[in-house]
Length: 120
Image (cartoon, rainbow, N blue to C red; front, side):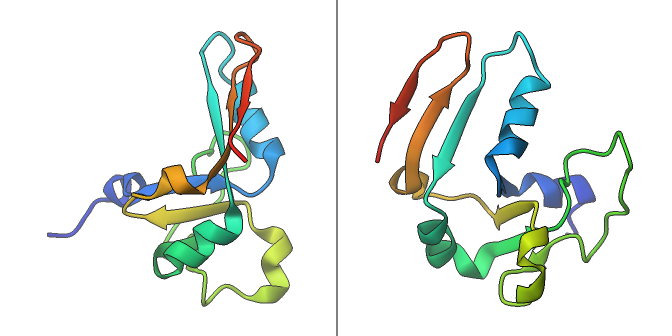
């Protein structure tokens, strides 16, 4: 059975490459409690490289300047051109990350609770 576009999107875990992306997402939902989880990128990529895909766009945002999405939206880690590394907006991992707890380096609770827990 073929999965819908939404099903394919929902089968991925998404990570911003830069902290600013996560901060913008948190700011977009004022009044909602937020938790930002930071993971060790080297361990994430090394442990899941066969399921990692990269995107040069924020795939979840399509309100301003919508970008065409399709089969080339997500490019496998092995196929992504090194010269475009600075263009990466998202890292995705297909089918979840069972060992996520071992990859976490920090958990930031929203500003309303003014608390941060570092796990490093």
